[in-house]
Length: 456
Image (cartoon, rainbow, N blue to C red; front, side, top):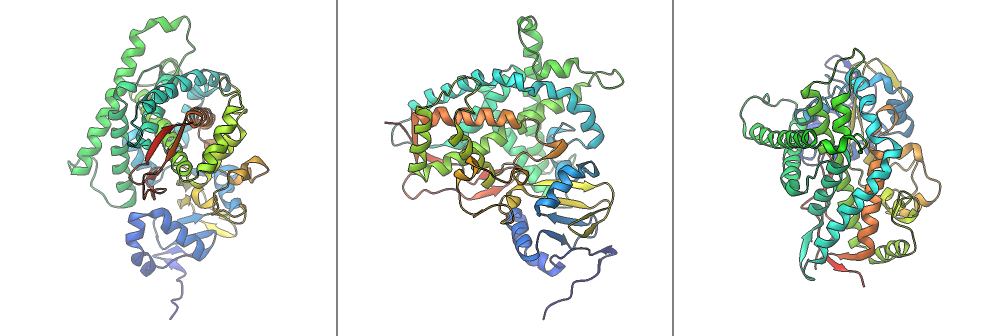
């Protein structure tokens, strides 16, 4: 017998279709193990606006193209970041640009924006080329039949690029320590975000101790970078200021300098967000390429006939850029976006009360057949022509679109192009594209184990 949906959940009006409490209980294991799969199941069952039977805060999944745009763009000022997901992440990053709520974000974004000015991205090209050549040297030394975890190489390479470009620091020597600390901290963050009631961070539970060790490692890396920049005065006359310089010189609207804690939070934010997201996208790129030798050959041929070096490299590689975009469509690193409604609103005809938690997922929007043809098919060609730009949001959209979007494209396309031109990848016997783990980013479960060979 079909159970009638109640009109309220403990006093909170039911304003949109969605599962009932018993449905949520039956799906509890799925919610814990694969929340993206649960959100997709709910979307396909109930439509583009889903309300979950949660009274405080009222919780909605929005997956219509117009609804997502309303939350992020047209009425974006009505939706803040004070949500359980970002509060959990702030245990690692503090109130950095990624997690800061509206007021703090409005003060901080203008201070950091100059570090990502379009003109400065030309300086990213030689840095990426240098780091990639280091990867080339490492891959050349790999025995022919050896199996390597490409994911680890992408994490280390992306961290090195971030360190040199944003902070003028060489993080290569302890890249594995920093990436391990990042992934370890994010595991705890995810566990806290998925369970409404968790022990306070000051209680020495195993998870909290693990988190504290990881945060201590990141803090140590920040202190090392600050010392390195302070002691090296040779850059003062010649270098363009990097993020550390900008943060050290910055003042707020009242003329006050940033505190040491504020500087720390911004640096940790970009260590974490600036390398783990790009590395995830690159790892999925290799996972897909290893399963498609013809696509590998096609992209390598484009590099053979293109000008890869220099600031125009991305524009000269349209097929690799399209392939990278398709990776970002199918495996968007930032698969989950949450917002808090600051005032009541109406989305697709459904009343949204003030204080509601809004869940958006680029991974689901990128699968919506309202805007994407054959969304389940991996097809980079779709990005060589007209495509629904407003519904392609791997970097978010609106005022709070990721500040590092252009950075990610330059780094990702250049690194892929250089390695695709020199190497082929394939799975060992029985290997296949790994399953995805929707953690803070969509991670390849168990890494990406491949055989790497010099291209003939």
